[in-house]
Amino acid sequence: MNIILLGPPGAGKGTQAQFLVEDRNMVQLSTGDMLRSAVKEGTPVGLKAKAVMDAGQLVSDEIVSALIGDALDKLDTDTGVIFDGYPRTAAQAESLDELLATRNRSLQHVIELDVDVDALIERITGRFTCANCGEGYHDTFKTPAKDGVCDKCDGTEFKRRPDDNAETVRKRMEEYRGKTAPILPIYDKRNIVTRVDGMADMASVRAEVAKVLDS
Image (cartoon, rainbow, N blue to C red; front, side, top):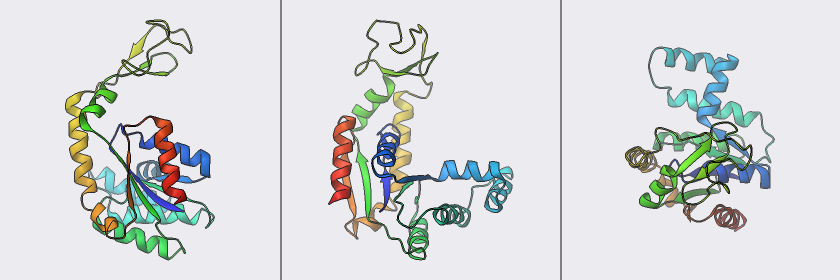
């Protein structure tokens, strides 16, 4: 099974992708991760990408498609794939169709984690972590059992990400909508898009995603 998992930062996309990896032995293909890996390993595609990035330019669709193709070629044909961060344009959507077709694959589902902006702001701006072990907490949804003390390591120092603020969240949402706007109509026409309530608790979202894939 091959799916595209969509959702703005903070919607829980990474968490749900990890659940699919655990539950169904799927492979998550993140273009950002693959690009960094290819550059680090010095693969032919990685060297091309590095030259482009060193020149201060954006990596072309051709290079991104080559990365996806290389990754697919390393997988067994029956291994399910989660596409993360790709496609982002109509041209990339067309390229993905070709990449899959030439490998006897096809796209079965596009799942979008739907969010409420104000609720998402509350979710993100309330996040903080233990500075010592990285355990995650939230002002409303998950506070330490003992105020000021980490449940996991008894650390007493906590930190927040500087970009976890309302203004940044709204900007991320605008960017996300701008990126997904060109591709969602393509898949809507094929009747393969399902929107899942990304504001529900993790277990409920996990169950809903599973229901979609089993339908």
